[in-house]
Image (cartoon, rainbow, N blue to C red; front, side, top):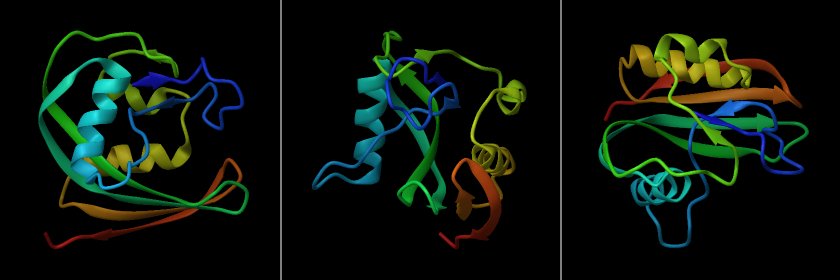
Length: 138
């Protein structure tokens, strides 16, 4: 997990979030995942799995689409991240950390992992108003 305490003017300031970033032109979600993990952690993923798509709808912040993955294999050494402090967190303790309420929803869905999902999170500013889940047939 990444504790976002280093960036100024950060919508995620003080919150714990997963590793991630934005797709570059011509890049697939899988390629973005591997690149962002390497850039933010120094680790190279060797085994990962697609979990779903998360749509963040918000009346204050820009809407976003996130491709969500979990990883079980990697190599390399953990490095310092300029966006926050990296920390290994036990799965059963993740939901106790200060984070977006919607993140708790998708972490729970990842734990169940019935099938890849499409999750829509409706926010007003920092407040989660509602969410809907649809399972994908992949």
